[in-house]
Amino acid sequence: MGDPTLDPTVVAAVVARAVIARLPARWRDDRGEGVISTAIAVLIVAFLGAALYVIFTQILTSSGSKASTTVDNIGGG
Image (cartoon, rainbow, N blue to C red; front, side):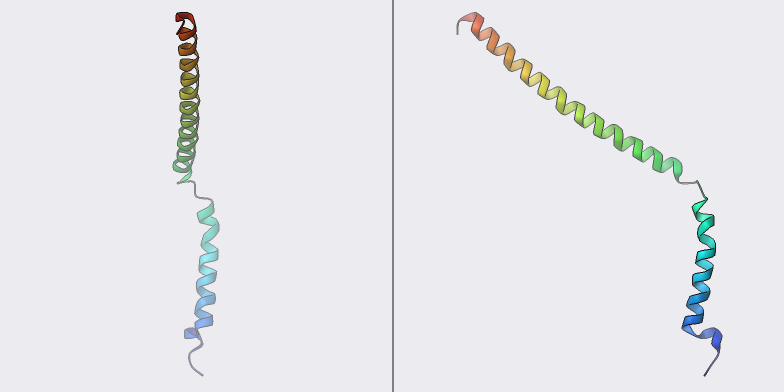
């Protein structure tokens, strides 16, 4: 039938075993942890900053309209 080492199923099995054998070593590697943690922290701070900006502008708009209404009432206009 041919050389069994060139059989595609045998080659796939050998490659799969080699990949599976290397996976735990990659999972124990902590090289990318700092980058991922920093990216998550940056995203959290960005969302907080955007939320605070929206809240701050709404407060300023609301207080500005209230002040304008009060001034108009005092001035009689």
